[in-house]
Length: 142
Image (cartoon, rainbow, N blue to C red; front, side, top):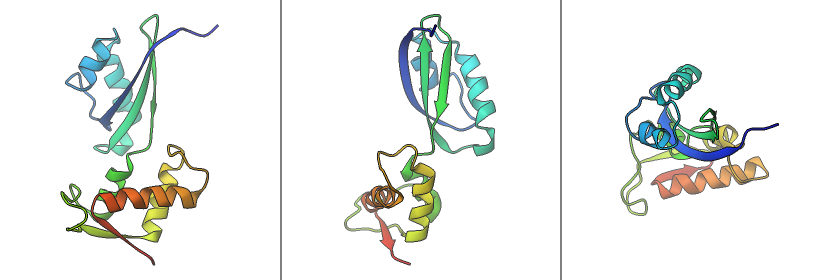
């Protein structure tokens, strides 16, 4: 018999650096979850990707126990890492902040394909390319 789910919480937390401060503490505390237990388990599981922002979906059950699933990093985070920048362009139409190749797009799409709403790698590449353009990153073939 499965446990009754009372809530699903979606957060973005830096890998290996979860702590009771916002956003983790208030989100979990309001649902009655043991915050330190989550932080310890999350940090243990994500230690190898230290500092990378990771989406996490926490499922809270009626008995206040929980499970969580760590997703792949958001596409903007991976794109910024590829061009070695801190943040995207304030005006993506007028100012470009860098370029990515088709090969880099495919690499990012392969990492994201499980979390994207696409049926093929080409569709996933197209989604990542759209994200890149909206951030002021030029996509070049090659």
